[in-house]
Image 1: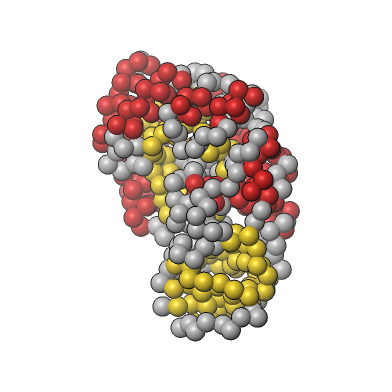
Image 2: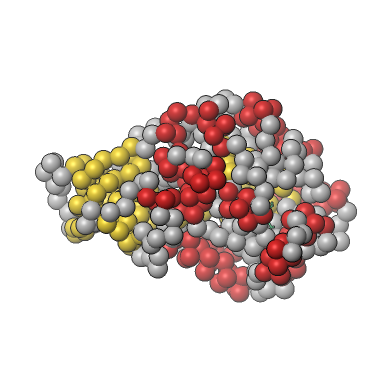
Length: 409
Ligand code: NIG
Ligand code: FE
């Protein structure tokens, strides 16, 4: 089946198939063609060109009416498998309690663990799949999903099975992360729980692609993280790490030393972390939705880019620190609060997000041979307007593997 998209005002995100991530000055460039066409064949991008070419034959033709085509967003950090809501803590935060204070009172992640424990697996799936549908309709095509609200062997596996079911049934590309070390589970001492996380690893590895640790004061130390990351590697799980959200924790250095694919959060960053990341395979990943919601610093995105690195931006969609999976809003926060250019933010939410999930050879750009995962916008949209008109509906249709998904945006 060949489908030809014609009358594309701007085709954005064109990239060579050999480019797996963008770094430094490359972050300023977005491959673009105006007045273009694109051919999709059997779910993959086949070719593209401009209207001065002879158009290729196709079984079906779709007139984009001057709209933009761009890759779907690649959201490399989410916690969308959770039960219920934490809107009570939202009120606590308005009244002045910090994220750490709420956690120390037994709220926060432990609150979500209790809710998840009491929610049947099918119900957990329905709630979580609903969030995925919402994300796709807002233009996201690839999603990383973490465990970490189970905090005991049974409930962590329940989460990973739900993430796996989403991966099987959703048209989005899904990668799954075992974040057993998100908080110390109820009934364990700290040491017992770190042991328990390592013991969960073989079962977790049946479903997960990555292992992650919340390395933060009051949660897990860089030494805990090192042990858990090494254990994960023995079972074939590539490390990722939550580092420097609330404090300079040493987590960035631990992540780089253990070959983490990404170090995520980075609200608190010094020159030492920038130096540690320079020249590494690790993608600095920033989560401005969490900074916005928790009123914490937005981090030093531009400094990473000026030091020659790339960055990824992700939603961190979760009930406690970022209850939104809207990647266009993430892009807008990147521009407005982190002073990224629209081009830098675009690369951060597409190809570099894909890199941070290890899938940038398959999605995240307009590249012949990659999955036909793209957004067709309404007429008149440009790359700059995406974060500028950050609440105006912009999607006409979302395509995943060439299949029309639609939108309610
Ligand atoms: O990435 N910081 C740790 N984990 C999440 C928050 C999880 C929660 O509060 O439920 C985050 O912000
Ligand atoms: Fe997180």
